[in-house]
Figure 1: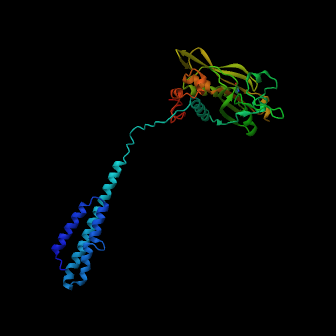
Figure 2: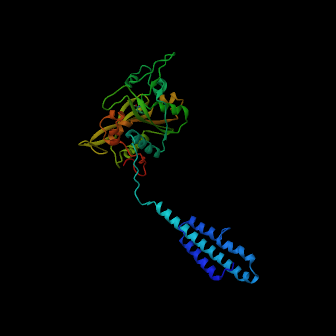
Figure 3: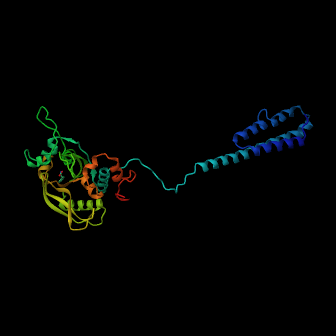
Length: 362
Ligand code: PHE
């Protein structure tokens, strides 16, 4: 086996051509194995060195080593090039145009009651209120007695209460007629200062265009040592401006009666009606939006707070009614009819969570 340097040159050219032509890493590796692997062409030639005469070996040894190095280099370079090309190809197929607008297609929508509840929570959270909840099934004490409704007081009958059958002791549970029992539950379990809002379901036996047996309220309660009616007024005016998304609002506080507040008031806001549209904040007409007042001393006594030390205000508003006003929804009963056409018309995009930074509604 007398290889000449021409033979080696030819072999080198042949393998280099194969290296250059290898289309991917796998093919390139096959070329490498065929040349430099244990039984590769170059390795076989190296094995022959031992049988050569010293003179021959002196020539062929360096020549073969040179060939091996040259081929190894060529393969390494080609491997790097192939790897880069593969990466480029992958990047090209996995390319994402981050400047393209996202087009989410959520199924379903947020119910106006949920939307308005979230809007109200966002506004009061910004004013430092904490969200509380209480049970829908209440006892007489929390729903009435502790709230200063004396037994037999006509105000109890005004609530059209749903009662459960009486137990052995003659006590009847009821579906809460308002969210005010959560005032009591909170004051029973937590020391002032208290600043809470309570969204939730409420129940009264009543049904027409503006009343449903189940409806929603948000209660508010602030108890501290120096809270007065000025705080109540400012707080509710700020709320009304934020909720109706107007810079200015006309509001009036009309004397009213609630057993658990003294003095009590209903808050009206100014509006005008243009055709079917209601413009809040301007005009000569008044719209009642909530009930409020200073917490009655008897209520404070009923939860063990000294009325000479603590005072505060409370308010309660109908969420459904506010939703009807803000979003021009004519009939309350439709809110609970589970009609998909109604929901897709009046519902809100699931991804637009109300917040004060980007706007409550869009
Ligand atoms: N609970 C009253 C209602 O349902 C509303 C209210 C709450 C009034 C708190 C004053 C203070 O009508």
